[in-house]
Length: 299
Image (cartoon, helix red, strand yellow):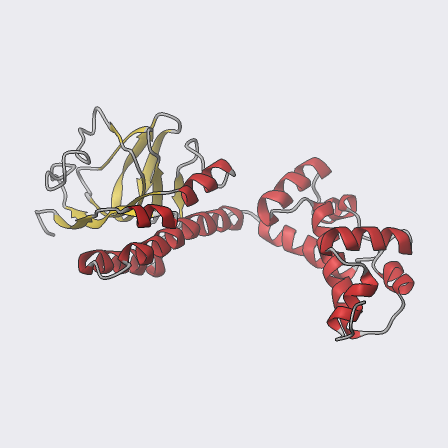
């Protein structure tokens, strides 16, 4: 096994247009740290170097991916995490942190550093937090390919390369969230239970209630509601309403059934209530929607 570290890295300049785009890339790279090698390597600008005992604070986000070996990560808000291959972790601007591989294993590490209002907005909306910065995504060929593609683009620095890199960074951040959340759910039978509940909504739309969905999954309603919203992004009642509106759109577009009949079929109390809910969701009455989708002129 190699006794030296291998590093491929690019540190980039950012112009006002790159900032205006919404996400700008500061650095991207890969380093393979051999067993018993000094970490971090010294072939980095001073603003990125740090002592693993004292840690550091950056002025950017960084998303790192470990593809081989083991180590640790610690930050002010999250505490200490044990890392191994298949783990990603997110660094936040202004947040103290430190990380390092175990001397006995070393590790392979990919990273991309960035700033921008897009990521800031994701933070404000609660998609990411300093308290939960680690993502268990497993070894994933697509993620590795994205990092490698970013290194190639950064090396060439052709016209609008920053915009291409920002797309890759958004993809990587999104994949970290998507893969880790679904990996967490797959460890239990939660995914299967939620999918069963979703099927029940479609098959029993006229009579289904959030409470009945909780019974199907053998959970208390409070627990079911929390897990269902974490998994789908909707509360159970919101999901039922979304399905009803989508079914209504399909029926209105493809049939000549009366509005009263459609309302009854979808479980609404009466035609007037269906009108109110549909208009609030779509900005159109059921009658107007039917005329529009069937090609009739709306006066």
